[in-house]
Image 1 (cartoon, helix red, strand yellow):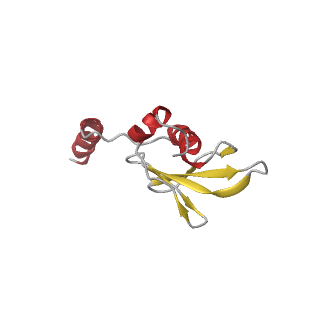
Image 2 (tube, rainbow, N blue to C red):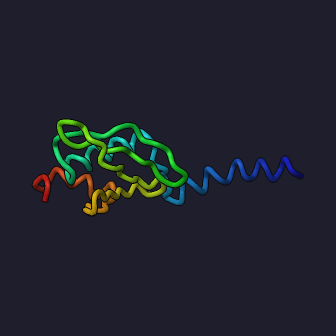
Length: 110
């Protein structure tokens, strides 16, 4: 009986995940999204680092200025890809990957 239940779970879970619209954000995708977010909302001078995995989100460190000073991290939710960032008392826009795609269509640094 245990084998049967295990077989059903192994078959059903990928099926449900596929058709529920859920697509987990990978570390590589999080890094790509944050690089675009950085250029759109934070600045041209500096950059980002490799994603650090947390339970429900990716933490991508941000470095700003010529000295590449650590300036917090952008948070990327694994389940939705939503990006959020605040540092030193300043809040930046929280955006979805779809909203980020339109960044190039706007003027940089609104």
